[in-house]
Length: 165
Image (cartoon, rainbow, N blue to C red):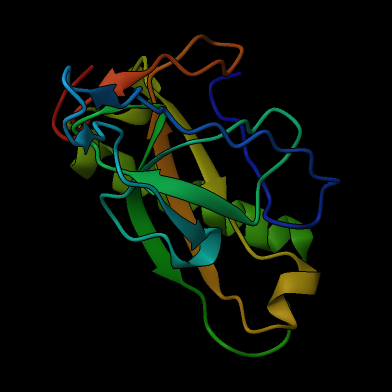
């Protein structure tokens, strides 16, 4: 199954959000410490911006927040689309998931340069649950990853924009 939909809150969530950390170095002679670790910024999933990259375990559901890192470093996921849903009553679980699937599939071809059905890349998406809708969440977030068909991410460096694969 190429498409692994994820929901922000409606599923019991177990997340081991892992961020790539590089060890700092201490110069000989008691010099200053140089930290080479990428800066991480904890960000609510509904506030992820297009172009943001992050590492997270999505196997058991979607996290409520992730540590955004520089896309120049190794990362598992990249946000390629964000869609605001209309205000009003919660449209329902199935309708919200269907909207996420449609919006992310449509945006994928423009982002990657190839139709999703022809791509080896995998798409995930976050969408509001009834619980998060009640708190004002109206955002679908589309993320892309390089990975095995079982959804295991293969870390990449840089953006997947325009890779056409």
